[in-house]
Length: 577
Image (cartoon, helix red, strand yellow):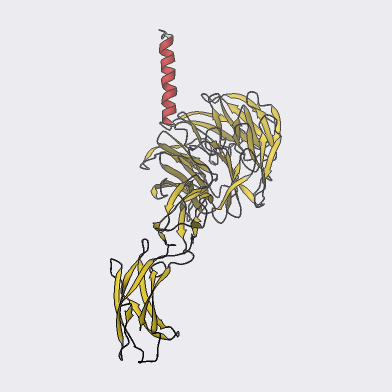
């Protein structure tokens, strides 16, 4: 056979790797527990708590683990009537149903996985189908041979689907994702409940006791088998991380992935999740109705680094997104915990209950969490809830200024203006804080408030206008004539002058008159012209002949009030000889 030049071989390999990478974006959840090794960990750009609810879909029945890919969310849901489940494709933007397909089956169980524009769904009878992810059209359908009971969630990796079946012994399967052709089968000790963990060099499955297998991905040939000398029905999904295989049975064992030897132990209610140098385990009994405590362990030493009990009823799947660990409780509360410290950073009520991951109950699909393409998706007992990062800035509501402005909209004292802020994730900073202080005079004064929430969203708000005038108006007054002779009748005098205010303007003016004995005379209002001038005529009584040897004095006081309430008076006099 003619050999290819080395550079051609390298080019072809590089092309294959680049193509596979392009077909499988890193932010997708394509298998149970996110990926083909079930690490339960993913990096999703911008998806850090606090989160905000994006949409909710109420199916009214138990819901599987979600898949998230190419703008869609895929779940299987227990049929409300009749047996079997239904596969739903939802719009990731709003949760609306794009298409659905009844998967049928003897049981209420089903599992799914996703790759390269196709979603693969397996029902409890072993009918495996490939659906076009965009349209829901069936691309191919294959009834897996040799078994009649299927409860192993399928895992897809690089064009091959791996799963298991039971009923007559057990069988592990590898199926061509493009055609549906069975590539190989391998006998195992029972074949249910354990979703394979798959890498380029091994297919890992674990069943009761536990019986643990590593199979060749290409041929199904046995690489190693950990056999404790017993067997039984069912299994649990293993997780592969840092060359360690985490297997759960009545107790948890950690196996060297190269030879299957036991190198440690752990306790977890469901498949643990891993990120960095830490593993995250919900420590508690492996049965429905019991609760656990979330623990972080060092992967190398298995030492417990921290623990988190939540509300005391933690039972859900564990998922790590961007160095935050998510876990849920029977009360419906969802928690986000800092992966490094175990400190709670966010919590919300997702629904009535966030269920236990029950891998041994074929009366409903197996549930779990998923994240990808900007979303965290959480199944509750009957609803599917999607969260995304809080990208909504805070809102601000202005209160009433103190003291209240007068009828003209002005104050003549300093003003405080309170405000309140609302935000889903909570307020981190407010600059300045409430209330705003207005201490200088001026018309239409405003201040800006910049508010930032705990998710980093900021908004700037401009206050309502505040008008303050501290300065007194300027008033002048003069009498014409200022001196008049005694007469037997009243004396007429014209009072004129100006009343001006440079800021708020003159609001009103008035006058009053008293004689030298303090006796009040007629008083009234003054009309001030736009230019500030005013003029009015008074008729004052004259004194009787001979009674007042030194004359009679009237004092006329003109008072101007500006629109802010500041007042100034000017005085003029009239003497009657």
